[in-house]
Amino acid sequence: MLNLVLFGPPGAGKGTQAEFLIENFDLIHLSTGDLLRSEIAAQTELGIQAKSFMDKGELVPDEVVIKMIESKLAANKTAKGFIFDGFPRTVAQAKALDSLLDNNATPVSAMMCLEVEKAELINRLLNRGKTSGRPDDANEAVIENRINIYNVKTMPLINYYEGKGKYRPIKGMGTIEEIALRLKSAVENL
Ligand code: B4P
Image: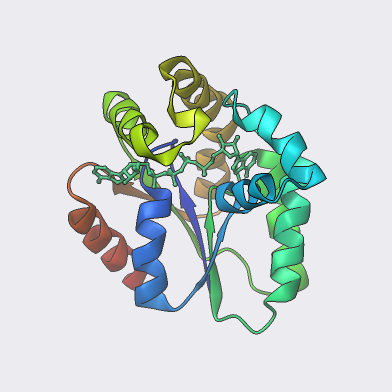
């Protein structure tokens, strides 16, 4: 089983690159951002709660996203593997993922970390904001907040996975196709 954590700051290309990985490796894509946005669109209680965090660029509380992932894993027991996109984002989430996967005896295979310069992240997100209708992409101050939160709460996961020998940095600058090829060959070399 291949379980990939697709990692990187907001705008690094996680969602974009996940699509190529699904095609190449036949994995189930679990994006906590997408799952939360569909809860918002359906106006569920969870979605209404999550929206107040997401619009400000804050992280949604750990227990909410962990529960979502837990139920998706339970619903896909025969999968060949998973791409975790945007999850985990905190050390508590990473520990929870380890214990959920332990229950299925299928640990994280690797954490693929897309590395992109800050100015490029801001450009990409502001560009997406022109058409996406996402409030968290529309405002540069919110984007800055998302990047700061990534630096403080999410970056420590690099040490977490490096300590387990699972950290794989990937240059995330360049065209979408160039980055997809880099990722594909890194996964093939696992
Ligand atoms: P996400 O949906 O994960 O948002 P993201 O980080 O912006 O997505 P991504 O990184 O996939 O976007 P991409 O670069 O592909 O999360 C949104 C919010 O949900 C978070 O802020 C948080 O509030 C909440 N949340 C989600 N998961 C959570 C968790 N686990 N815990 C707590 N809260 C959580 O795309 C960006 C743009 O760049 C696109 O327009 C794309 O076309 C473009 N692009 C990509 N690659 C490019 C390239 N090489 N060149 C030029 N443009 C490129």
